[in-house]
Length: 233
Ligand code: 6GU
Image (cartoon, rainbow, N blue to C red; front, side, top):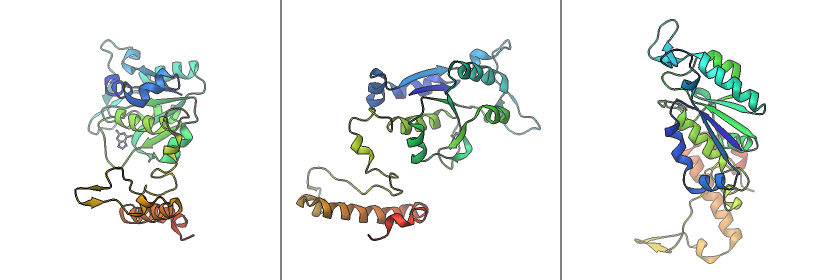
């Protein structure tokens, strides 16, 4: 997988990939990163990339030409590039999107700063527009990082143990059951006794129950959306 980050602030993005398993994935050539700065494609004297909004409105917008020139080059060199615009006005980014996008060859994240990007750029080049939650960030960089991280760990070979994917939150529309490690009693708090007895069928049933309760309590929206999932078998 190749990720291209189109951003005015590559230093906000780069360090995240310089440690841990995402570093290992790059060393193993599973992951390749590229950074492109729209400012390098601005033709005006001061390499300006933003301007006032048509019709008024607070804040500056990134104007089309530098980003479009840059995206034309990326598309020409990489006909399979899948272009994503992070934006609070996008559709919600979910685990199923992370899994689906992990199968792409090349994903380009185009981060806006200021109040965003001229809508015509998104219309022409955007394969998808995603929001990572109902709040507003100062730019698309953090959202691009969140999405690229969630996508990466679904690429074969990135996680040491692929099994760790199967029991996670959202894999089956539910929040993950609580998990525990040693010691069995910590500051007077014991782990559920069945976990110590080693009957895997019982533990599995118990985890399903806890997962259902947790989902119903903390995420009633998820619980309702995936109702069949929680029925007694
Ligand atoms: Cl994708 N971008 C920005 N700027 N703010 C957000 C967002 C994205 N998702 C939620 N808030």
